[in-house]
Image (cartoon, rainbow, N blue to C red):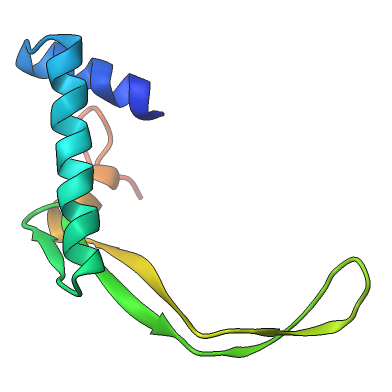
Length: 99
């Protein structure tokens, strides 16, 4: 599913106009991004938690040349799925659990 398809799903679910649904999605993504940029975690109960983790500097190899290169330390966003999302993904559409 891409962003346009997600906007369409919001339109179908909420009855909002396409423009309003797009603005709402952009606002939610913007708020999550800003919180992560500020060092805050974003916890959505039943869905999951967005956090920022520090990745250490290290060494890697250029796959084309085999040359060793240094990779600087960086911050990366991380998402951990909540129990509700995990349960929804692991439940079949008929309502029974997958094995």
